[in-house]
Image 1 (cartoon, helix red, strand yellow):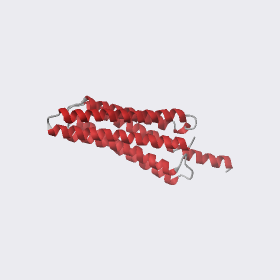
Image 2 (cartoon, one colour):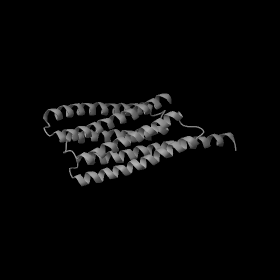
Image 3 (cartoon, one colour):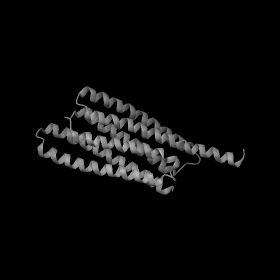
Image 4 (cartoon, helix red, strand yellow):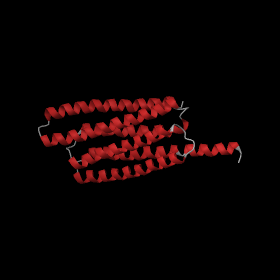
Length: 215
């Protein structure tokens, strides 16, 4: 086996991470779209059904994360730092877990419909969509670094917008919601959604760090 062919084998191994990260992001996007649907839904049974479907995506995501770790353990060379690959895989899994947690709280608490909660969920879905685009650029990171940086900025801006909506929502909730039980329900759901946005920002920050290190 000549040296060129030998090195080519390692390049193939490196690139096996890229489609797995794309799969992970696409899986998150499917779950986030269902979360938007769930926040818009008022029927308790349909909300529970959507939560079960999101749970299926969470399980699928766990499998993808496990695959990434397996490839990492067996790879001799990696496209970027091994710790970064592991941290990103765990971070994306955490984003999906947060979506699932918010979904679970909607299913359990069954809060009354709220346009603000829908708005936050839509921002989360937008962040998930940007993550799909970001992972799609991993294979051309050097060339697309500036574009990826802009996408990370967009996710950061989403998190800021969610913070503004959350603060306004909570202020109005404590001022005008007279039903104490409903107040607790909405507070817990809003907090879970806001936390999910924070996790998305953390993942984008990890991606930005990887881009800076590798360009």
